[in-house]
Length: 243
Image (cartoon, rainbow, N blue to C red; front, side):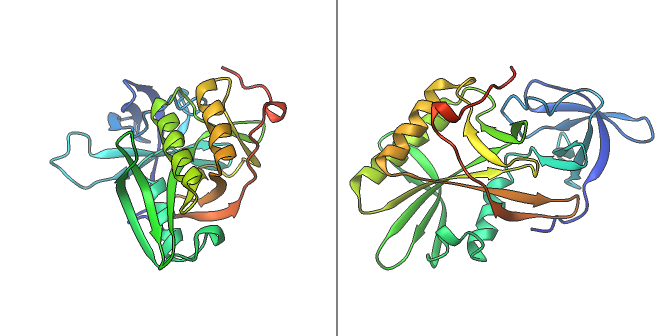
């Protein structure tokens, strides 16, 4: 996925009220921008960090610019949580995820389940449906990516819904972690942050939910789905995570 124009490099002053961030432009101008990330952004919102913005070019928007990515070392971390579904949809259309490549029909945002949920993608062929939930991974420590970065009752609900589908046996149920940073070698549930989610993830796996992880490749000009990444679920695999 190519961005309409390259991201703009600025410096972060602070991120606050979840959806706001103050930044400084190279000319010294300070501005408030939209931060489309409801999570904690642990390790990705420190004052002085280099961050990247997109320009809506919409003078009617209250906040014209959007925080898209944060620089960690030489790498960019995608923090705009509205992007992963678009990235995955492009990958599905171009058959870049082998486990999900056999479905000619791709339906985004379909209502389903006992708890009035909405699945990110429903994939269908003549004989089977595949329900796919996408979660973006931005938190990492020592080359391990963790999800979630804050307590997520919604994410736990999605796991219960996927488990119900898997137990029925006729359709596939898939949880796909899109790892939004290149410095991750394995993905684990952040049991130290949300133990209920970690338990629900292991329960979903036992029910037959397929759990996949793919890393993105990102620059200021484009982003796309790259290589697969292993997922570890069990407590014996879980290392420490700083709070």
